Amino acid sequence: MATQKTLSAIVIDALEDIKARDIQLVNVMKITSFFDYIAIASADSTRQTKALANNVIEKVKEAGFHIIGTEGEGTGEWVLVDCGDIVVHIMQPAVREYYKLEELWREGKVEFPKPKVVKKISLADTVVKKPPAKKAVAKKPVTKKPAAKKPVTKKSAVKKPAAKKPAAIAPVVKKPVAKKPVAKKLATRKSDS
Image 1 (cartoon, helix red, strand yellow):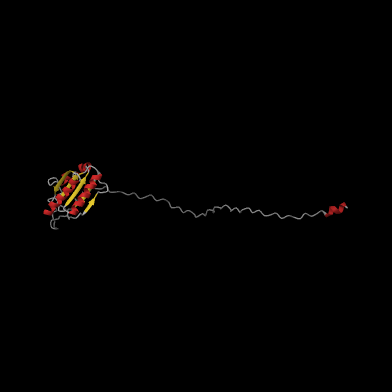
Image 2 (cartoon, helix red, strand yellow):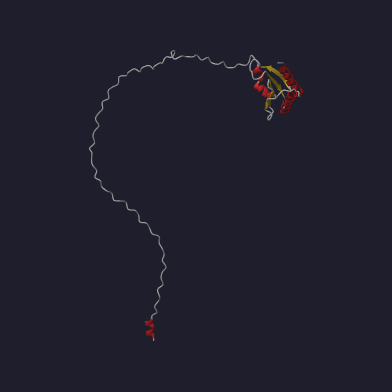
């Protein structure tokens, strides 16, 4: 218990060194068993939140305590430093106002849902309920008329002529024209002589 007080004193001193505002230490021993205290502080800028978190880490390690982990150093709007028995929340004012951790963790304000009491039921206690019987409704008898028979006519199987397919058109191939030898009119020459 003495180490927790010294750890809480180290954390508060580290926050005051870098000018944290509105520092609060909330005892949550009766609410949770994960940690004993929550330290909440405000910072004016992301640079200050990061500086406060680094100072808390350095001072806690110098005192011989261990840091379990940190979260939120990337954005700097809300930095959490888990020191084991104390969890330190360093927040910018708008974020702190939005989440209101002080109200959430106050002993009288925290309300956890109560578990529902389930009554054990044995098989002897259970009664199988049957659905109510439906009332019988008098139905009118359905009279069926015999269906009119259609005369059966046999159709002769007449073959239809097969549809003629158009003949395939053969491609036109041009053949070279053979030159016929021109016969000289020998007769005309003979007659000319």
